[in-house]
Amino acid sequence: MKHKLKCAILAISTIVAVGHANAQWTGPKLKPVKQVEVKYGSLTPPNRTDTDMESFRKYGLGQFIHWGIYSIAGNEWNGVSARSGAAASEWIRSWAGPTAPKDWKNTYDNLYKQFNPKDFDAKRWAKQAKNMGAKYVIFTTKHHDGFALWPTKYSEYNISKTPYQKDIVKQIVDAYSAEGIDVYLYFSVLEWNNPNYMGKVPKTEAEKKSFDQFLQYTKNQLLELLDNYPKIKGFWFDGTWDASWKSAYEFTYNLEKELREKHPGLIIGSRFRNDEHGSRHFDSNGNILGDYEQGWERKLPAEFEWVSGNDWDAVMTIPPNGWGYMKDWSGIYTKTTADLLDLLMHAVSMNGNFVLNFGPDGNGNMHPEEDKIAQQIGDWLKVNGEAVYGVRHAAFNPSKLGYFTQKDTNLYLTVFNKPVNGIVRIAVPKTAMEVPGTATLLLNNQQLQLKQSDLGLDLDKNTYYDVILPAKFQPESAFVIKMKLVAPKSKTTKLMDAKM
Ligand code: H79
Image (tube, rainbow, N blue to C red; front, side, top):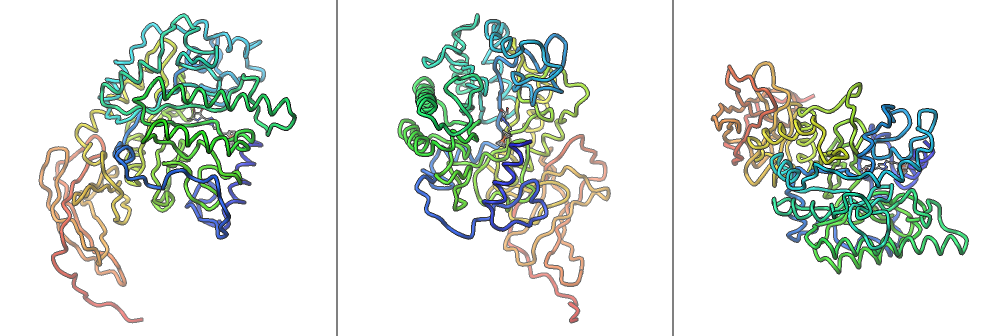
């Protein structure tokens, strides 16, 4: 609660002009009115145009995997749910209060001695991801508990000390790369049980010495990851919000530089580091830090303007807030495939990638519901993927029926709300230079009737294109109407604009 308040105050103080209706949730990025000197701003230009970043822009769908020691617990221990005591399943180490097992942290910190995922098969996961239609994966190398899923030289708390022993990160990188899926590594900077880590700004000489060691350790691990897994495309950083890390802006600036020099094309999001004034994600002048915005965690921009032209991804859980394995999905709302497809289309229609999280169990199996969802998303994308991959935001008025996406002269409308009259009406500004010329149903390539309708509303700036759905069309899921954009046939007739 304290942190949330701090966050809200920070947000208000850095944004000079507020007042958007949705400002309490999130909102458009308003550039600060006053520009200040920023020495430790972004090392890369916004909207990089190199091939790596072009690939990022085309992914559409990604897979997130949260796997670690917490997966053994599955958000419960000895039959007692951690729901009332831990923030999320991957946070189970912080379980406290009356429901927490006795000596819980100690139990947790020794759980790695049991980590032996007998069913783990990276190739099986990679095949599933491929079949689902994911074009990139973000894999947890180390979460807030500090446990490393690769045999790092820089900490004893790693996979080589478990009964399993083998390098998990390597298997993931190899298996997913072999399927043509780009690999990004999730890396939490903060560590709950590292004696050299602290949340506050180090003050005393002893604290400074400790934290310097922690910084060096982080640098060593990141360079090690690049050395070990040169095939990776980028990092997805987390746990970078504490005052200690924020105060190390010079170190993190130089570290980012070093990572980029070592691995040309590397993609790093906006969550890695802040500028010298403490501004995170965006520097004090409102410019994005890093290559893509990482602010959309379990939420999406309501309007396209909110993303301010930046590249971005949205990472999403299926349960309300649980990234690591949650054994028990009962009694909570878990997003359906239809919900997830809606969120996917929402994201891509605003130039973002949608990254769906999976939390496999301690044996290396996905949750059975995740298996089903992956299959259903894959089935849907095999038919409708054209509206998802490599598309951009379409500059048409948002539709209440679904989401527009565009690729060259192809316009796609993914319809989630089928109109009862079977007429999919598309509003197009009368001044538009490109308008729908033909319409087909992506489902079966059936040509659909398309006609222009002027409603004759006073001062209406739009004309309307009506796509007529076949009378017997009863789709079971969202469907895509693909339209060819052409030059408008003629100027629309101006019947009678009232002069008032
Ligand atoms: O790995 C998953 C979560 O465990 C992790 N990110 C995803 C991908 C995550 N860790 N923490 N959180 C998500 C949310 C934490 C928010 C807060 Fe704070 C941290 C509230 C208080 C401290 C950041 C800093 C937001 C407010 C202050």
